[in-house]
Figure 1 (tube, rainbow, N blue to C red):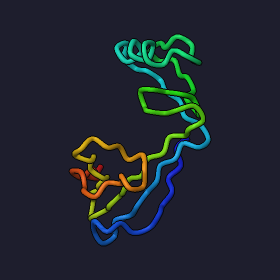
Figure 2 (tube, rainbow, N blue to C red):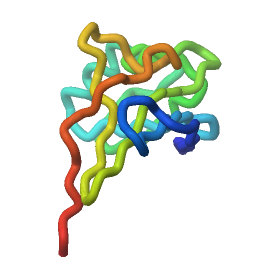
Figure 3 (spheres, helix red, strand yellow):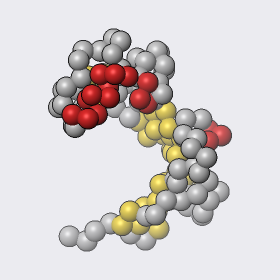
Figure 4 (cartoon, rainbow, N blue to C red):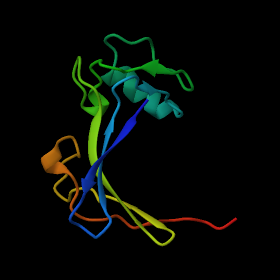
Length: 119
């Protein structure tokens, strides 16, 4: 389970908000493709059963190299959300490849928006 923690205004645009995503109760992975299961069987062997397609395993507070998680660490991502009319913007990835794993790496640019579809 990933909790969203709203942290206040982000300076990128009026109304933009800092949002932290923290998996502090549970974090599961289910490979949906054989290729991903094969990668997990190479990189995430210790402490896990054999990875199989459509079989879920908990990675909560475990070493999980594909996501850069160390033993005891919980997943955290420091992002932003901006809503404008029927569009939602997330933060754009840093051009130097840094993740959003620290407050100082929180994005400072917006991605292309998601547009709400009218049904």
